[in-house]
Length: 249
Image (cartoon, rainbow, N blue to C red):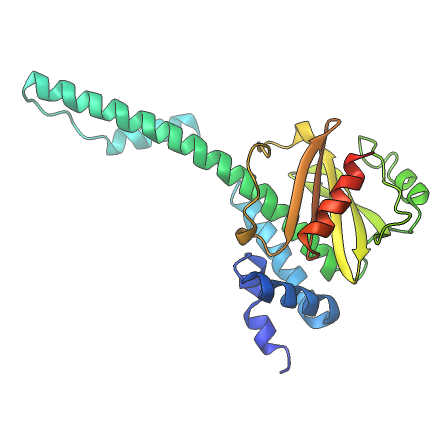
């Protein structure tokens, strides 16, 4: 079939492991192919279902304690000074482990949020109804969200710019309701996600986004208690220009 070569790369694309140019080509194909877009949406939904299922069991403190006791090595008799050195070594290893676990936990939480945002963007592109409110008028789109999400936001004026507002929809990130706005610029789709900043558990500030791990360009920032994500296959310059319009509001 014509799309077999594309379908063979689908998982690699959704995992953000395609080279940048190939990812852009795949993104363009998904937007124009109903079969591949349906497969992409199905894979994204399955991926998110697996992520949710993986969080259903959290080991209790008692379970962890019993497991640690079952695998703990019995202390051996030896020269006292050697025991002291061994104990010191354990302390150092434990301290390093705590620091590493904290760092990796922070990285993991941050990467998880970025991955979720990319998944939401792909799901929107693959959907037959990408927006719930269709309008190029910000004065129509903004009021539509009132009463549907627990915060208010402003949309920028697009006059004398190349950006076109397509519409908006409700969305969720880590069970937190938010807004997703869709913009077009020279046949490229850009999503702008807005969520309450305090509701997101990951620390998203202080580090640049690793683009090699994402199939799209992305920017994120916090402003007025809200967390903004701008993501799409448009150029980094286009995303930056759209982000500046939002920051100016």
